[in-house]
Image 1 (spheres, rainbow, N blue to C red):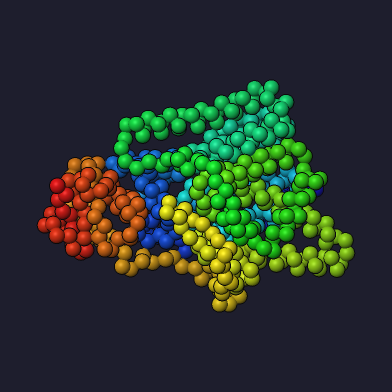
Image 2 (image 1 turned 90 degrees about the vertical axis):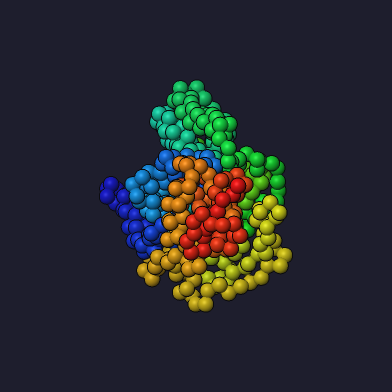
Length: 500
C-alpha cells in the first residue's frame, strides 16, 4: 500500500479538526483575559498571576508548576496574552496527534483516526480546552511517554525521550508523578529486561533531575517567600468518597452510547488484545492514575479525568475494530453497525453545560442531573439520591450547537456590572504613586467585586502588578467608596484609603 494511502486517515482527521475548531477559536477572542474571557476558574487567575511572576512582575505567586506560567509569561511579554486559548487548542491537537501515533502501533489508520476524533470532538474535552488550566498542556507529554515506552522495545534510545516527556509533563502538572509510578510498574511487570539498558536509566535520570530540581527550587522559594502556597501534597490522604463522583462523570465523558464500544474494547483488550508491551504502556498509567485520583487525592474535579481519557480511547479503538468486524459479516449487520456508529458519533458531541459536573446525557435533550453539594472544605460531591431528569436543550439542533463547526458562535462581551477596568487602571496609577514597587496593597472587597476573596485578590494582583493582601498587612487598601475612611484617591466605585 502506498504511503499516500496509509497517511490519508491522518490528513482527514487533521482537516476535520481544523475545520471544526476554527469557529470555536474565533469565538474565544477577548481583549483581556482578566475582564472579558468567560472560561476562567478561580485557579485560572492564579495561573496568570504565576505567569506574571515569571515575566518579572512584582507579584507574589503561589508557585504552581512552571510550564503553563512560562507560556503565559512569554505571551505577556509579547503583548499577546489573549492568544492563550489558541495555544490551548494547539496542545489539544498535539495530544490528538500523539494518541494517533500510539494507536497506530496496534490499528490501521482509519480505526486510529476515528478513535482520535472521538477524543478530540468529545463535548467535555472541547469545553475544558477553553479554560485556562494546565491539564491540556500536561496531557500530550503523558501520551508521548506511553508512545516512547512502546517504541523503546525496538529503539532503546526512546527511553531518553520517555524521560524527557515525563519531566515535561511534571513541569505542567504534578499528575505526571503517579503516571510515572504506573509506567514503573509496567516496566517491572512486562519489561524487566530493559532494566539492564543504560538508555532506560538515562531516561530515568533525566526525569528525576527535572522533578528533583523543581522540588528543590520550590522548597527554597517557600522558605524565603511569604504569601499563598500551592500545597497539593496536603490533599494526599486515603478517601473512597471520590469513587462515585468519578464513576458518574466518566460515564458522562464517554457517553452512554459510545460506552458500549469502550466496554467491549476493554474486554477485547484484556482477552486477546495488543502485544504485552502496549498493554503495559496503557494499563500501567491508567490504573495508577485512576487509583490516585479515586482513592489517594482528597479532591475531585472532572478535569482530572482528562489524564485517563486518552488511555480509555485505546479501549475505544479496540471496540471500533470489533464493530467493523461485526459489520463485515453480512449486509444486515453492516446496517446495524452503521446506525450504531452514527449514533455514537453524535452522542459524543452532545453539548453539556460548561463544566457541568452533575449532568449525564440520557438523550440529546434530556439529562440526568445528580444532586451536587459542597463540603465545608469546598470539595464537590455528587449524590444519586434526589437526582432528576431535566430538559437542557429545547430543540435537537441546540443539543449539538455551541461547539465544533458552529459558525454561529460569537465572542463573549465583557459582563456588565463587574469590576470597572477604566477606574482600576486609574487606581493602578495612584497605587504606584502611593506605594513602592512590589509593595503589597490591601483589599477590602468593593460591592462590584465577586464574593470569592481568592479570585478577587488574584484578579486585582494581575491588574495592579503587585501583591494583594489583607488590609491590616498593607499601608494602603483598595476599598469601595462606601468605606468610611477618607480617600487618598477615588474613581467610580473604588477608593484608595490608608490602612494604618
